[in-house]
Image 1: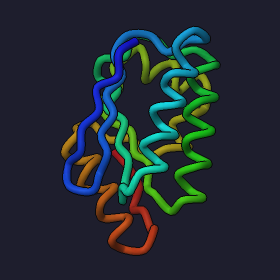
Image 2: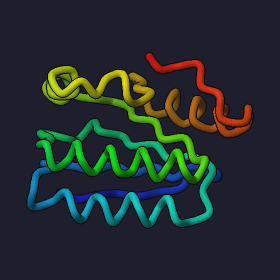
Image 3: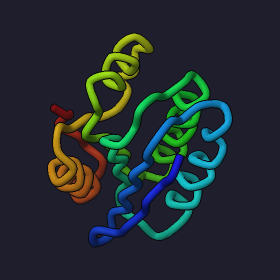
Length: 124
């Protein structure tokens, strides 16, 4: 797994590529924790390059979601490939995160949540 990271204004965008499994999940967790510890107003995960996510990967996302909530940083996901979307559905994770079809939608929505004081209108 490779993780590309960039900033779009005050929003951190992380783009993991490959597989998130027991071997790679800790590295993603460190990247997410590092992003959340920095001075960002929102965090977006673009999962367009994700091939697979295991239970270890889902656990990392849960931990990051808790960290984001306690920090007041909106965490949004976007661009789930069909296979990954099915795994999220099977794991019951579709309702846990705002999920968007496009990266620009996710960035705008996450930024709007922070600007409105934490209220989310939901994802697509």
